[in-house]
Length: 195
Image (cartoon, rainbow, N blue to C red):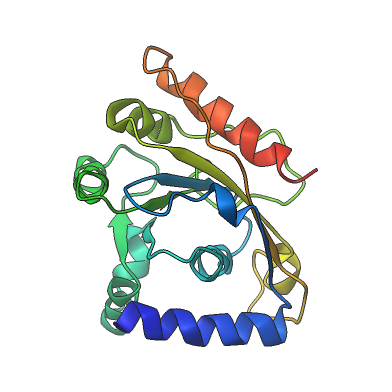
């Protein structure tokens, strides 16, 4: 209930301030678990994805965002759980796997951090390859455009800007592929949606 209320408020704000547009929503599974893999250039990306997807999403966020008790509570209400940055986090992986096995979709950012909008050289983390290989659920690529203008890295204030979210067709993942190769394939599909 709380998620639905917060999503509705965010939807109204996104329509007013960012003229949010969504494409490819027909590619999103209507039921069952899936992994939504997206680029990440702004703190607004999770908001845009949560608003653009009609289903309740679960998010990973770096653990230091949970240090503030009030903000931690807000993140939890938004179905967000912590992951340790820069290293393998078995607890976060177990949480993600538990959510998936219960039929819930999760959002993953393959690069593991915010990157520059035009940076095509960043290497995705193998963790998403591991999860995709082990879980065997649909992987849907997504690309958020415009959030880097509304709230770029290092900015303290939001600026009005047009934001769009594009969902792509399901990515087929071969379980025998090395985890890093799976991650690169997913990232290539995400970047393809920016064209």
